[in-house]
Image (cartoon, rainbow, N blue to C red):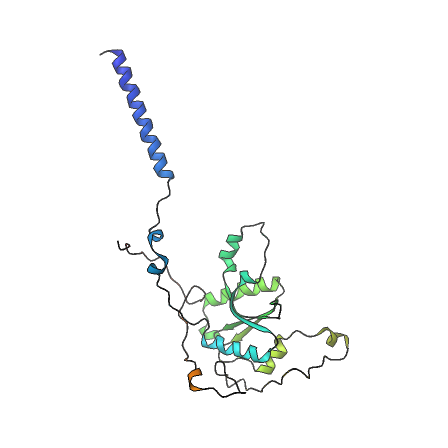
Length: 240
């Protein structure tokens, strides 16, 4: 066989192998399309309005609003909304570990500066290990940020007077022996009995028409709640 023919065939084979190698590398470097990316956000996950707080959390919020009328009480606030952390390490990793975790109730002054956090927990016999770990992580980071954390138990919420005495920052004059601050303009607090929990958004100073009665419905489990534990679920093929 002619040597030139053999050389030509060998060169053509090398070129063919090179083209195949190039396209194989190109296809390997191209990211594969995620099936979830083909789903419409609303069509794949139809949204429905629901409640933000549980019944126990609504009762605790009502106690705080009555005990601290001059302060703001915010509910289900992610820690990343009121905590700043250095960015020398990955901020995304911090968000994954703790930043997206929500505080049940946050007490702020009029400038929205946080003065305390209240977490409503189930009784010890009904508390899960996951909930305890979540609370321990939150307590550790809030302590480092010098934000007081108060843990209340479902069914045994403090009275309005006890809540105010525990959460309200002590004025500096009290420690130095100066004259106490005049509280004549502060509206008197209505006495409550700890053993009798308040109804959600109950108000002693006005009558409640029937259409303001709130149905005691619990919010569904979600990623903000400890009882939510969902593994990966295969998605169906999108409809054409």
